[in-house]
Image (tube, rainbow, N blue to C red; front, top):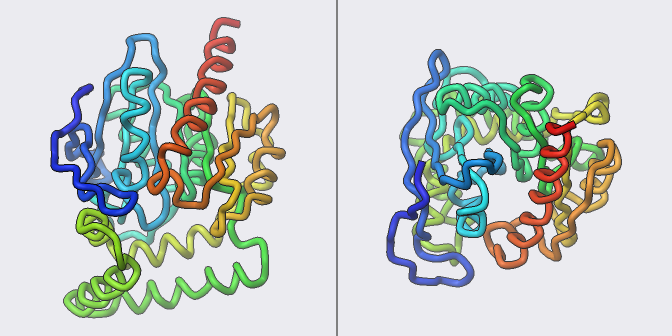
Length: 299
């Protein structure tokens, strides 16, 4: 692992730099699963390790680049690209959040890490919850940001998420060049005003996996078991969120015993667009979980 960031040009365009400085990254083979991509930052010898789990359609770099400098020197940090996203695993199997959680556990094995504090943002929230449920011995605590127990609670939301199944099927059977062109046009329309780095990160995603991930998010629900979470947990609520309603985020916090709530005055993209607002709140949430986890180990 390294404390150094790659030195790259940093010409600001809006709120997002043209290409931010990032810690060194590398491909990581997960035996029997595929090859993913991780970045690593050193921290104090006695500091817990954070595993940063990004949101849907993003990459770990896009989601977390703005907070990595704030975490450097305080925690050991690992970021991972989920399957079908960024430089993550490319698999023939249908995308599932359970596979993402198992990928994360396999990455910990490959990196020689025992326990971590998963930091799940948006879709990364379900992945973090599933990591605790499927591999509880690997989780010291949880930090859940801009996320929920489920994402299709209303009739309108269920209808919206149901559209991803036919899109995924059509994408699987479309010729690769047509799929690539269509995805490129979609990214161009959705990233007007974004920097070239942002567009290039988004184009790393697999459009089939993105559609299947949308369907998986719509099916996800932890409401029947999330109340069993038995590790220190903090919920970071994005108060002006128009993607995951703040009310749903608060319900997640209320469902987890002794979860603390940490509020950010920002929308769903605050982590990357306004990291100066998000980073201090994330630090408080991490400190709350780390202190409680340390006390639990001592007792």
